[in-house]
Length: 606
Image (cartoon, rainbow, N blue to C red; front, side, top):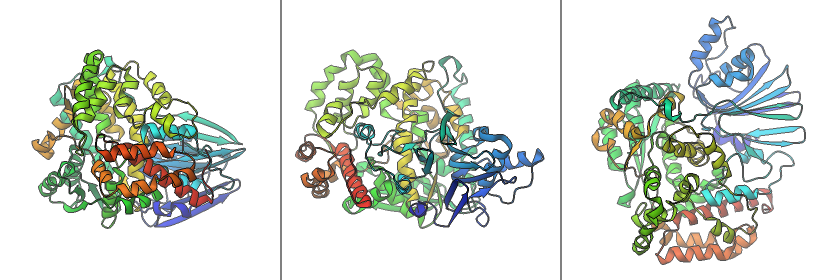
């Protein structure tokens, strides 16, 4: 299992056997490089800890422990602080951690294991129970090495994947494995498992929103972001920034340059297709702050790269932006061990067009169907999110209830399409988890509730998975300063008008960072970290797509109906529809099924 995770920590590996427990860890040495190897014992010798991630307030927690008369710790690393805190406070210690983490604590005295995952789900943690045994790992690739692990596919996870292009937690693609949800801990003792939620970042009630003016809130947000970036820069190795040229990464670059004691390295990806390229904006920020800037132009060699991506994807992920993320991570890993990335800014501050569409739908939903004939007459386009696509989605979904409407704006395959595609189905609705989460925020504003859906689903199941796997594949740690409790506390208490008003998005964030990045970038349109997949799949990638989705290959896998996949390929190639998101998801699924089959000697069973 440890060898399977060598890419996540190539600097050292450790293993501890303690009675009925065995813990192993791979280390990417970033803080206290000489003394931080894991597993680490607490000062009392009772707690044995392994963790993946970073605890940004570990120095503060260490000082508090020592002021309370605790023994001096042997190292400067954050993992030993976890062990000492557990010995002092028990499982409640996890509520005091500021950072990103997946961790395990073996209590030698109580013969109890604790697993915990950070409140936003930045770091992954899978587990499997069988009889009296519990196994866990950062990736499924390690967990499947447990003796007796069954590779039977989970039909509900497959259905969710086809709906979202990612596997919705707590499901995994295998029936025997589950993801520990964000903000949860798991306690195992004598074969009994207890799940507890210890944190739930949630929008404030409508009558508890921050009342200050926009100017006051913007100043506060800027300082909270500065505090977060300062904490995320703490490392004994160089830290860089993944710079897309958008407002989130540009703000991180500006603050990192101001707070760092040395020049910051920045890394950017561009495209030959101009509507997808943001290198010019990235260069402007890099020049403004004198960064050591690195660029790469992406060309459609996805047929060569996609199998490599899937090899490290752990589960199928149909997010095509994984490809440029892989490339920029590979580029950055040649220069630094840690990078800052902008995940979370859209979900917290209102950056997606779907948020404006949801607000508009509450006003015109019942009559939005009149737009459908217009949308159908507009030609398809290979440009980024063409108008025809947006109008078609809006006119078809605006009249639906809030949860169903928000999903329909982004849905990959509809229920009818999933029925046509899946050889075996369970009939479970993938939106059930969404509805449960929606029910927890009844006191909040409608827009905040929609953002909360993305914060707990799209962000954790897609964006953070993509960023974690694509960076760790190159032994690169990605830190996400927007997903810090210091920043989120304010974001979750903002009135809707400070996030989205009309078609204007991220209103407060733009105001807060305009002095740092300039008005042109602060007011620039969101482009997202996407690729020209539609054009590639009508051109140089189509032969590769037809091979990966061929009847012989899909028949051998026994999961996707070949005729349905072939029909999608034909419709996209004809040029009347943009089905690139659907096809990209099916290609990644097929490649993943092949990989699982090669790894086990037999095709996974549905």
